[in-house]
Length: 520
Image 1 (cartoon, rainbow, N blue to C red):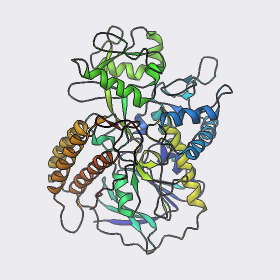
Image 2: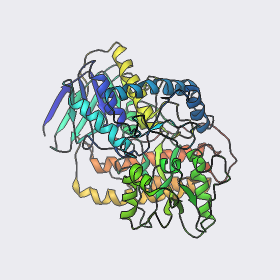
Image 3: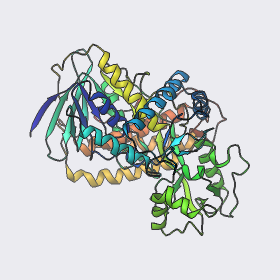
Image 4: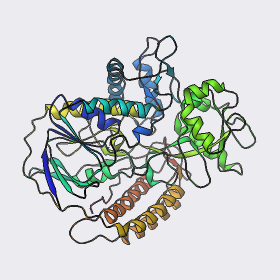
């Protein structure tokens, strides 16, 4: 087997908004190697329909954006981190605009600003209508392609972080899916930007690869993973009985779409914020309404909206709806909550630094404190920009030794014969998570889930010596799923996205259950 070794100043794992932005910022400071598990334009950021929330007008204020974020976070945000997010995020967005990021504009050339749930001002910038993630990723890829100091490794699966004799993170070992070879990348600064774990759930808006593998890498290296119980369910994901789904942007409700039950009644009309309350409140209200009716979904009503406006601003979504046989001009669109964004992840400080020197995390994989118990709409791409940049700056300023000798460990083995068993067990786990560890939870269900997860994990079959891809991933997803359930048990009160049927509302203690990781 071919084993190559490369040295760099910054190793970035992941090619979503956080990884691409970090690589772009780092390109002027040293040699960068960016490794992505799939193609460069992949991952959750590429599919993000929401925009970027930023203060860019005189009638809006940083203080208002901070207040909206804190309110949505239900008392568990780190206020200082939120203030950094809002202030530095506004500056980052202005820099993107100056660099040519194609945000949507009105006919007179002014930026088009939308309204989404939990926001007190029209401050959401979109691009390509509701394909902001795609536009941002494509924009950043173009810049990175022009950087001579950036080397991109596509189809590279990072399966082990390397540590030097002092215990610092010193790079990663990569399996090359395209060649079957192995790559050792030595670096004094490694930035995890590997996304979340919402694909552990049966109904999810995320791509299949969102399994939290980056959390496993960080945990193996000695980093803490916290708040795993906080999984945000987006209120409006398209509903099909077969379980397939896709996101229907919150921006549609910002443009006037309403939610109706099976009787055609607008059930949120008199609720605080109505359809534009923070996501946790809207998702919970939809779930409660579904429980009072025969159909397992509610309707997103667009019939009163201007068809020309819908086509111009939401053509991508309207086409997807039509492809499923729904005529949104004549009937409400069936929607129900789906796992969307993981607030829990690898604990970092305000520079994106983890407990392990040399290891950083940015984007959905990280817990920076800005989201608390419930993320405010369109703050996620903003977080990618702010903390991707802060991680690069901090890494560049620390006293970083050149790459040193490390113990590379075994290369990864891929046994195709194990794939079908893994896929079956993954589907079973996703159904279990949706049933017992979904938007609403209780002690009996969580304990039942833990029993089933631990039994399934005991059946996994690691091979001696070199790690095998499918068996390692199987152990990882069951270990992480168990940690989520244990964290949910530990937080015995409802707060934000964490909803317990059997206890009263309140913040309770933070859930910080550790988990057995991808290589254990």
